[in-house]
Image 1: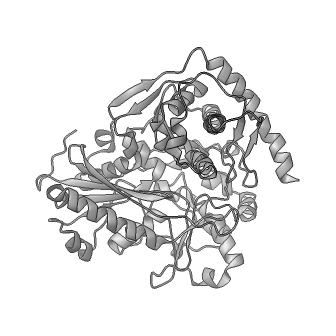
Image 2: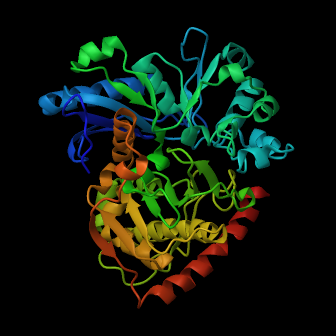
Image 3: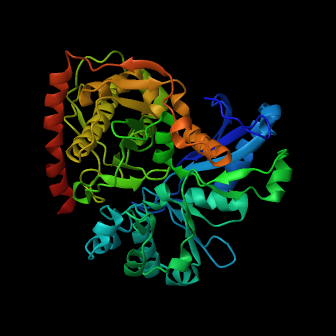
Length: 494
């Protein structure tokens, strides 16, 4: 892939704003990765079910990673022509008329607004227009909660930005949002790819509080002059519309059309299927969102705590997640201990913010290895739930690419392939998924090249096949595991 740039050679930056950190990737115009940098930040859980973050930490992280790229790759860095930001969805950054942030951002995995979500979901036309169940993690119910619990802040809210759009605002001084991220607000009319007056009205919002919408591959604004000078770029830098994290990851692996899909084994777990037409099925609890490029959509099932489940176990055992993953040897069949990964509730297929996680069948002879195996199996079984829902919605997924931190575990990747019974491709540079997709969007925005030309599948490092001798054992274990949700639900919902 080589794109002709009239002004000469250029480089592009993709920023991936995650829940626990920011990754920056520097890419040449032929699509090669030049380098990357990371910065971490924390999440606040001040009450059960609450998850918040200070947007100032994103700015500090952005300054850190940009300075690192500039120091490590000075010649390529100064030729940057465009930047795009990918980010975690559904967050609510509330700003006043002067652009000041009014409160910490309420994140995607915050479930405090479950009552508001249920009320909004029951209103006429909401599912039909938004294409989805209104989940507690979505943005609209968060604002209903703020209106009730923090009326003074709600009254001062002049604009609501999603996390990556706030970072874009800092980069440019311009308010804008884009389709794939706006899809997770319950304010977007999917069929027409615009803000819905009806959805805004029913959730007590006004169109004036919504930033203008662009497509993710559009040139949305330019980097501010002050940052242009600070970072020493030699040409004006275009800021692309950007993307929701999973839409960006789809761009990074070339998942644009029917039959394309991937597993993201990250903080949350996702199975995504690209779709060529808008065909929502909200009753299944599968998400239907606009893609980051025009005229395309995607569907996905979401497990709220994937590698986050292993992170949780590591904290309890006083280890780090990599140490626990290293305890797993070769896959030799499911274990007897079961784990339900509902540490923060669950999205697909249950839409249940009140459910919580559990271990079952613990034995006095049990070991840490048994717990790690159970956690990995529980996450894979939860992904299988999403896989089944996507197939029922019409997605044709005969193989999947896998990305995210969990994909670095051979055991976990093989287990996913066997539980889902599909080949799983591990791409070269899979750790760069959403950041690479963002860099590709930046290239599209600057060059005007069509998405199909830029967003091609990466080279595959290896393909992991299902273990044929373990498929039936994993199937039996999954069918047994899935029965436990109803029993657990009865306990939690009494």
